[in-house]
Image (tube, rainbow, N blue to C red; front, side):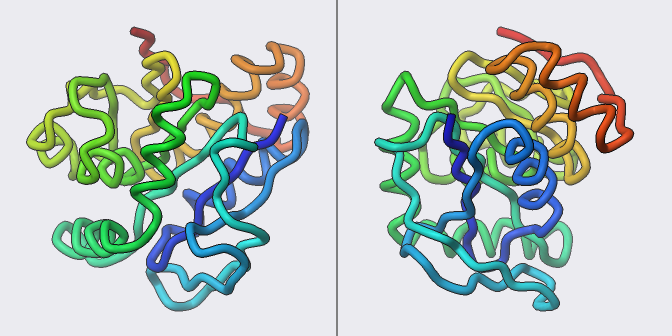
Length: 196
């Protein structure tokens, strides 16, 4: 299985690194951008990560979309809004349209999808400060740590990326795979997964 974890200018590092490390322990994981291989700067300007390749929904089994890091609450929507002028929304639309691709988000990643008009009417969550904006973009808001809406799985806040990664392992590879990684990283998942 291939998990592609998306990088965009202003991404939140923990939103990326937690699911990347967890998924990469049991499947192939790669950092990608809409533009292809490049250095991508995080929202705090202190860290940049290198995208290995271009986001390719025809290759990916899982696409993970992080949120942004910036001043709260106004900076996050502004950073996410800047992605709308890049090739990213088109590639994410392709991923969402492919039923065999599981699209997952951490924190504001669901807001990015909502702002692009890709998850209208779907069940999703985001950081508690963004729930109102998520609803204003036509999403059915569920205030839970992880929300499973079939081929769309969203996680609420920055640290929930760890729980998202573990849940995706359980869902896609079985409970033993998730337990093995839980033991390795000495973390027990929090919250109950809300399922449609």
